[in-house]
Amino acid sequence: MYSSESVVHGSVLTAQALPAVGQLLEDGAVRALVAEHGHTLVAQTARRILDDRRNRLHTGPLPADALTSATLAAAISADIDAQLASRLQAVYNLTGTVLHTNLGRATLATSAVQAMADAAAGPNTLEFDIGTGRRGDRDDLVESLLCSLTGAEAATVVNNNAAAVLLTLAALGQGREVIVSRGELVEIGGSFRMPDVMMAAGVHMVEVGTTNRTHLHDYENAITGQTAMLAKVHTSNYRVEGFTATVDEADLAAVARRHGLPLISDLGSGSLVDFSHYDLPREPLPQDQLRAGCDVVTFSGDKLLGGPQAGLIVGRHELIERIRRHPLKRALRMGQLPMAALEATLRLYLRPERLAADLPTLRHLSRPLTAIKDIACTLQPAVQVAVGDGIVVTVEAMSSQIGSGALPGRQLASAGLAMSFAGARRAGQRLQRLAAVWRSLPRPVIGRIHGDRFVLDLRCLEDDAGFRAQLPQLPELLRQHDLIPE
Ligand SMILES: *Cc1c(COP(=O)(O)O)cnc(C)c1O
Image (cartoon, rainbow, N blue to C red):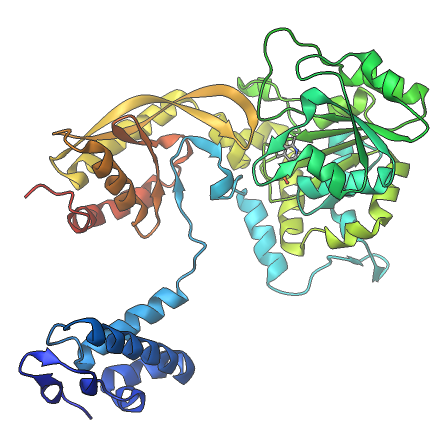
């Protein structure tokens, strides 16, 4: 045992004052940590903490109690807690962007979460046919559902829509030409750029038309003996306005048919229901595109569909078969957990009357403004009390957006809480600190800074009890971030 007295020379600690690791592990508080976490983690952490204190002693003095067994044990314990804490944390998305790519896009429905937990907990029928007792295909879990929901002859699924596009191009066009409009060479975030995907898939991209105008004859004139397919790409995250012309799927499909070529369409955010039923702007549906004559349509699972990360490929039987048999399919296949969530999500679409209640994405997007205002008004007094007099909390009108590139420019009227500082000096820096305070709650609250205010858009807040329960922690956090006036 070492004692705190033996490590103090005058009031300055020296490196000799550090206990050996073995000695430290024998200490009562540290022994308790070993009993809880085992020797490996505690010894490793103790060694690192001691190294750190040794380095700090070389560069300057430490407080007199820095090397007591109680202080070291507390440091080791805190470090272990940090190592064991999950980096993937649940947060409140109050940014006003419903499908926030950095915050995990679609929130899954309860049934999808349950299906995933059930599938994860033990063996399941991922690729097993209960009826015959023989091997099955994981696509079987969702293929007939996808076909009945979209009217497609066949369907397959992969890891995400980027994978769906890559695989479709590679399977149907490798080494040959794909014709696409210059107005549709989209870049989605995260380095998905249509020309690069074409190159990675091993197809030769043939651009036709111009940025703002592409005509049917542009496609037709570009068709050669090397053409493998025509492609349409939904310009999901931008809009070209003014003097524009695009060729719609039905007209392009007629040309494709005449030349015996497939027409593929990358829809990006594919919704399976008509959003105009919910007072939202209409997005093109995969079923519309198939009806218009597209042979293969690809779309995301975690955008407007409201499911897990997935790439859905629907279309003509013979083409889907070729896609399924391509070697990349195995490399890009979906995992069993998202597969379970996708199946459960698709089943919700069998009951369209209940969809706006059961599917969180649609529930959030279609939430009535009065309901959002109500929750803002109910929470305002409690938030005002928690942040104190130096910060003014008001209920404000806001506008949310759908996110994930869907329906750009379309804002949804919303409401929430805005916070500003009573004395606006150096407000910018203090706003950043205020945002950090909300982010340091046990379940971080993610808002955004808008002008000279920090705002929380409440469209996506459903667990207001959980939100409220954290508020008493704000005063202490505000003090730590130097935001409470003396
Ligand atoms: C979002 C999007 C993609 C990529 O889909 P992920 O599911 O994110 O991989 C591809 N194409 C378009 C048009 C998109 O909007």
